[in-house]
Image 1: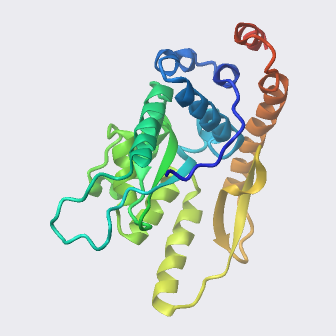
Image 2: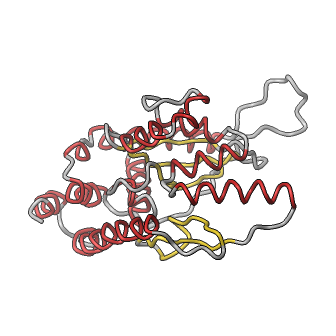
Length: 282
């Protein structure tokens, strides 16, 4: 059965309205596909969206700081019995796991619009009997700009700015270690000096078998001050203006989100139409 944590469900309309206020983008209000989801899927979508806003995906959904953000990972028992003879067609996985996989794909499609894509990507590394799959939020224009900025890295892998987000992330996930680390560093919006350090530290550890000491630069999210939008830097490094500018920009977005979240997302008793009307007067 799928490994999922139960989370408190909150109506999606207030969260979508919050996106409207912070971005001024009417495309977020196109919820035709969401409205057609079964009730259980809409509740799951609600919890995904709220979790995303409360964590690092805030800076993808409501800002341009992160081309992509991790939202949630799920461990689904999809792998066949390891004793199955090679070349033999494996039986279908458990119905519950297949159902979860299908529902997650449906939810991602329903939440996506022309500016923000929600994609479901399987991890390369298996964790028998589980296949871990990750939901990402993607700000499509920012991802395209990042790819355009580093053609020497992306183009050899067949990735261009017009490449669909899911294909780009899947290609990066399946690269060899050093290129995979660099690719995710770019996609997650880390500064170039942080990406370079992480890759070179990994190379050094592989060759010397000695851990390269480091510190972590943490950018707060609603759900916590560390461990979400976080990247490694050399142990003796003094954060540069690029780090400070990123922190300041994120802090402004987080402060605004906290005010609006407190004002609107807690008002479960208000009809969604009233919440929508009031949000648009902010």
